[in-house]
Image (cartoon, rainbow, N blue to C red):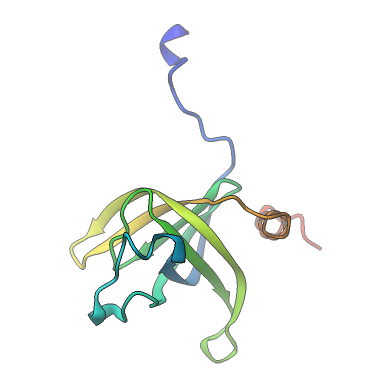
Length: 135
């Protein structure tokens, strides 16, 4: 059993989802990570797809590379394009980046960055919905 002591175990359940999102470099890291002008420049919000959601973070597929350690803002969207609303907007830290195909597309593993009580409440609310505990 001593061999498994070094393993990291996921402490929260990851839920597979399919939601639209917008991703942007956090103002705290815009001096370090700059998006090209062809993507809309440093203040740009890039489209992405949320593919998993958990108490520890969120998985997003986007066509733009974000380096590990970069802080990013994500807006999770709900509803049809014409009635789209922001479900939540939260600052995250990029923990994992995996190129998924030759488009290119990247799977970003984002962890919540110092979530406020309001953000923690919203995360818990979304997790309740995903767990089927919402009325």
